[in-house]
Length: 323
Image: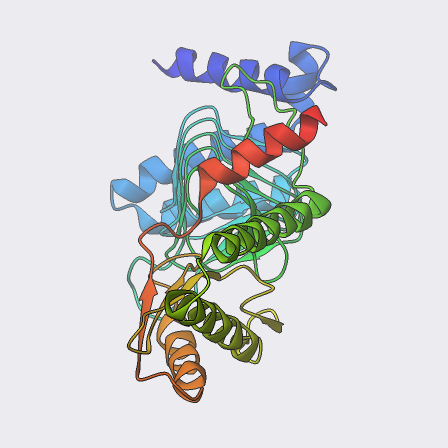
């Protein structure tokens, strides 16, 4: 079993690092490999309640490799730390199988009490150089964290996170499970175009409805509802997401607005996650703005159960690539 794991570690380096040329080079010149092996010794001592011995072995490994892995951390199989200098993995961190970690990555904690305070990284995750993943959050299987990102919220499987603070920039992780790590990073222009296409579709639908309305009392009533919906959209442009400093309409958080004949407004929103700490704040701001419009009797704000329409984004991605 031990020899099997050692072979797996060496084979993983050949699969994920094209610079690796020979087994002696990997054995003697890869500090990430040395750090993983020393951690396994330190972790064995730790789980057998030899805490000082585990910390001492971990300290020696840190001195020799520049990589600090707490002996209490749980590291899966075929984990590769490339270059590795400055990597820090905390005590309650959990790293799954086939994870690729680059230099300067921090899997850190945000609490000062002895509890689960470090992240859980699931299988097939890639974490770029200098990224910090903080707190008891979960990085979903197949996700990618861009270099220099600071991630403080859980990331869904297959997503790509970039920026400070980390935000979801794409739904797909095209990592091949057989070891091909080539995958395009998110295209900001594609995101802008996708939003413009959504807005265009909304305008086309409104024009179609207005063209089909028969002149008369019914037509006037329908036009009044559409005008009221547009007033609500204009008013909601004053609601700013404090995280990014952009209004919720341009940010794409506003999914739909519908006004009934009795003046009741139904507003659908989408957020990164229903557990987002800004849900209540944004909902209150949206309700307050909509209630301030003459003719609106009540406002119903709903956060949809689908935080992000991954399939639509993927379809648009494929369509735009064909153009």
